[in-house]
Length: 212
Image (cartoon, rainbow, N blue to C red):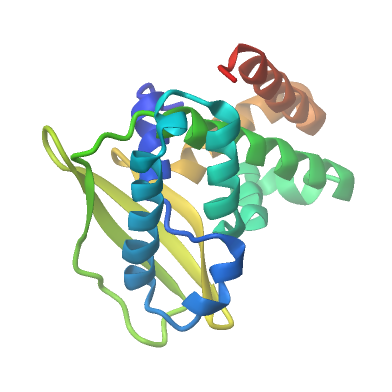
């Protein structure tokens, strides 16, 4: 896993590109880079202006992330990609459990870091290289604040007239690829149920030690 967990987490949260579910239709048809810019700024400003989030109120943070980020992530694709070739070997129940535990893991990664957002941080888009007919794109952004800019890239896919994220690159590491390596090791040693159990154990431990 990435060593800089806190940095990794808040970057994902601060640059999360999604409004609440009711805004999905309002954003239909918008170019993916414009969508990323507009919505990520909304999430960042929400984190900056909420003292409960800044003080580490986990329930409040989880509610914000679950509302504004999670509905626009393609969790089935993200989870299946992270599990890799073992996904097809999993039963429907195992696939369901993997998605549930992976979602909790990611929510807590984002949530535990939103309190690190500071007032001077902003998001800048980099030029996008794509064609209008593309259904898979990479949107590149930078987090600017104190210190050097930090690159943050998104892979998005289009279904109908809506875009969803299925991978994120922070500090040169793609999220799905990063998890794929560790997931494969766990499955190789203890099977798919072993991975489900490991994720559940980690999430339980995080919940027990979280500030509420």
